[in-house]
Image (cartoon, rainbow, N blue to C red):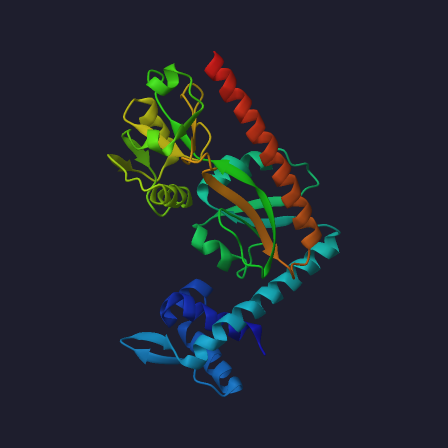
Length: 307
């Protein structure tokens, strides 16, 4: 089976039209159509039907999509492995994570790598996209949710929810280090939207505690939430570390029964990856870096409170 024809088939699936797929692959539309027609002839199946100027997958086409992605994924792994083996080492890795994880963890970790370590190129993604990205050429993902057992994975660590307040807020003046949900809901809150995993965790804890929000404002930029909190516009609740020195962090948020509230990060990669050993070692180093970084952050925040 010709892999180029499989690639053409998936391009049309993803783009929705032959025109858009041809542009994405930088080929002429007639040539793309011929590739798919040849694939249909080879398989003895009709893969698409025409509906309102768009191509729709037939039942057979739907069944083929998952197998086709797996086939291309395997082919890319073989090609990458050959290049790496010929060079004697893993030169480049693609890593996908949420923007907050890239900014708060991956980018600082990259600054600690040696010249002999792989070149890590990051891709931003929403949590719901990370699973599929391991099937489309991404070497590793860092996810705030548990990954399927279909993949190799490693728990990196937990990131607590923190409440950010202004310097003259009563919690700052009292040098509080922990607040409960009961205390939190009495405040005007600055929160992420419910597309955020951290917000979903907070919502579930509120529901389990039988509590309801009072006045809230929503924003999906953590640094903006922190800045508004520093300006006295409310209590900002995020998992991100302080955006700028001098902004008053933090009061850790706990459930009413002192349960941990936050997110847990996991590294995941394909079991069939040509360099699972390298990825496992990289994940372990990332876990150690995360642990050390959180310990350093806690120390700095405590020193800021004392000061």
